Length: 274
Image: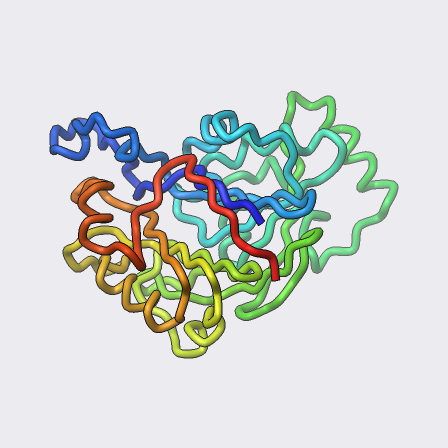
């Protein structure tokens, strides 16, 4: 299984607009960060988790040419606002999206033109009508055609060759999803998690976890808090993501290696399939 980091920055991205701090002025390419997202490839199946503002740029940079589905952690703008660029993957039919009911409901309101009443799992679509809608979308100025698939907490589901489990997390007062995909766990924007969620990621080889900065934050783990989760879940290696401009790539690695290190945009990892 191959993991590509499409973006590794917090909601501002790095460099931050109008900021002249050392990290924003850094000449180290590892300190240039798009909004957080990853691509997962395994035996012909390709998925993306979240589509932030720079999704198009990240997709071009990584050579993304095929997509089977998109998983969403939550509906904050830095995780969804590149969604319209999914339209290139919907010429031959709808592209499935996965996430919680609240997340997908919010996305369908923001991007209402990308969904029809038949894109929701509780609706019963007439096949001829569905085919007519798809054909119309093909010729209607490139509008995307997306299909929502609501996932419950701890639900296990498959996309092609990938076995996936939704892991509920807390992002401040908001419940969001992380995902376990075989021996990989991706937990971004997390500030706390239940014992049950921690148990669900035990035994992973690789943990990718949101770690904003050294200082406490009400809706994100610090580096130390994220490192504690890595220790408790027993992973072999941990990569921080959703990183702010307060700490450089080099500083993070110096302080938290060898177990934990900073991810960076376009980093590629190989994770053994289960």
